[in-house]
Length: 538
Image 1: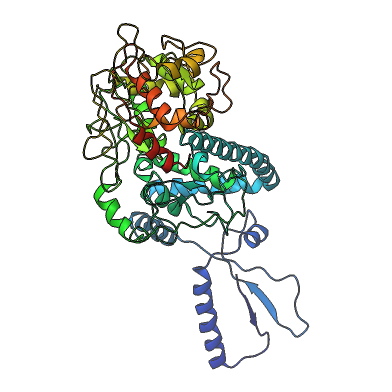
Image 2: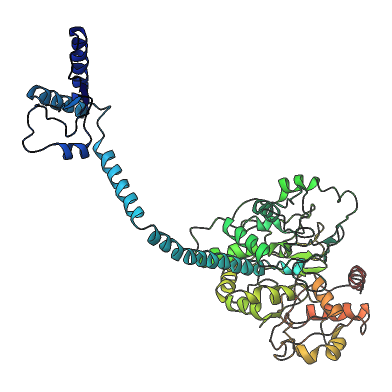
């Protein structure tokens, strides 16, 4: 509405015409405008249907009075309004799609619902936060624990524990034909360890042998085997070493090999030519147990690093069962790691899967006992695996076809001969070495070489004794042998004979054992014994 003043006095005709024109224009303008709802409710009465004016309640003393101009709606204007509304509804630029309108209504309802009780919404969010945090903590703890198990399966401590047994603090030498390679500190210490490594850098070191600074690792680190690991296992190992291992500030000794082996850049070419880079791919034709065993043997367990012969570039001559030399025996740090294929004489051909699983658990089995570098592998790694994983390893190894033990040098020296070791006892003649064996060995291993359950393993048919390379048999006599750490088995420690027997006597007794009873392996010479004793400083 509009309040338009009119004068009660005499007004010139021209001014009256101008006033009427102005009033008419304002009335038309106001007729097209909507009134506020509150004013409409207050002003309209049931009998106010016409446009007649009503006098104002108050009039000014000056003689002015006011007239209320009411909005009128004719039939024609109503039709025009209805027509305009219909056109607006049909216009796609003005009309709102039905689904959008429904969505808008739903959003509005949701907003209204959340606005109704913000305190209740906040309380619900706060109640969920501890549950989410607890679930995240449980998931992280499970990942770290899985990484701990994987680190045990990989026997990381064997190389990376410090001399004072600080876990993973490094500094111990890994002997190689080129000189000692010192294991680095792999605790999360940011200065001396790997605390500054990202997951990507950790992965590159583990599976490709590339450190965070871009330099190359020597293949004493079995990254060609660890290349088989899955991405999930790498992440679990990273979580364990970053959050499950105590940092150590031990500054591990740096490796300095003689020229040209100190040129680490050349290891990039070595990796390109010899290293495995393939992830483990399960065989669809094999069982889940077989595939699990293959994954552990080829990858985390890196069994081939010791049990597969090396080529002239110190490369493993095979990384899985498709390679003829895979796990057919190899020399590592002056130990001969035996053939793990199904070879009957010096392999696992006469072992059952249960024998293998028991050996991995206890360090001894009916046909052999742990020795040398394998003792800590059993005590700190395979004995801590689950029974399911040990039997998976056994199932995979038993599936390998029999393959002859590989020669440990290009000339084939050390290949087994099917002949007796020295002259056979005839007419009361005693075989060389038999007297030494009777005096120093028979009490534990038996006069017939069958072994004594509470003292020593059998030597007749023992694959270590019958191995093509006699290095381990000689070294056990020189240095002795001890059970796996922490094992509760009946096998006792074998005493070292280096201060008791001469090199000639050691050669004689080892030759006797390799040719006595049903054994048929080549004898050893005094020179073989002297060469090994010089190499191991014994």
